[in-house]
Image (cartoon, rainbow, N blue to C red):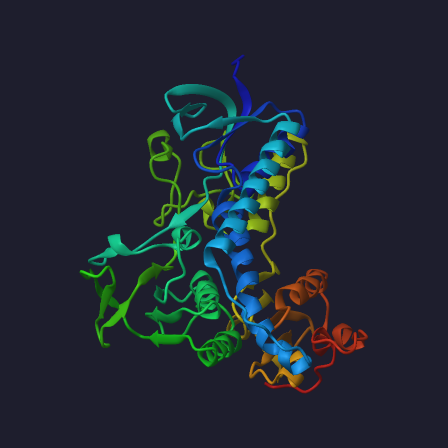
Length: 450
């Protein structure tokens, strides 16, 4: 019988990898996890957490303005970008320490370096080999950029979190959630922001009411969105600024160019193809419902599989993996009615089908509401909230809920529980609302919009 150094080696100590590793160890497995950057992964170190800290910081600009409508006299408020970045970095250091302690207390061995598969049971970490009965790939994703002339001059979301100073002007290329979130951050903090998108609207894949609503609000806040154009060249000028050229628009000059045009599965250079792990055309690892690859003892979870690229999904996949292998309880992930958020300004919360997706499945009823949040009745801010309910006409089951506006992610989390339970519109209607809140709108919409 083969003897291995570990029962499980996980390559990647992000959210999914850490969860799978510590839960597997708690179920009796001997586990090691390999990481070549910071323990905590993209979400904690280079994504969700630091980005939301910056979003909190950016929101104070509007909060100070709004306070005058409530009797306050704002003082001489000055923003210090390096101070915010330093505070953010201190919090990330604290969180990384928490992750190290979690792994240590769970009995998981940390191996620092780049893990590369040598064969089905062997991983090389910086020249030293380790063997395991099972190998789990949880290497996440990485920003991807097109081969545009001058692309070497741009930054990604990784670098945007650590800029030494706040840019006076920034061009953000991309229309996805990362692009609109950073556009909101820099705009609120005082940068002149231009967003470049190839499509006709932002947030492809989201409900059209959300897409249009957010674009309108971003435009009102001073963000210039250029749609239907492509970047043809990025030229660094003698004074350190950049001149961007487009296929059907006038050139723009800026101080910083940021690309947020998507992320690719982080599968290159770790030996996957050499040992025969199947990848799809995007480079994502192909897995079955239990996260197993075409090789029996090699599994993969999280963004590297390109199924649903959300941190809580990676955590759930990690838990399902551990239960399946080490608790004799086969668990597969259910990907329906998973809520998600865009921390734009205003933010978005969404769960279930878009109107377009729902109509492809059958007849639907649409309930739509747009209103000024109560907070802005005294402050005078021109910002709207939007809520939308999509109902399957035949069954009365709510199949989609979408919101743009203050607290949308917090509200949609609760709505997602109801939808996971198969709630009907009649049950929404019979639920008593909390007054005065924005959330009560979800249980008081009675008039069909379509």
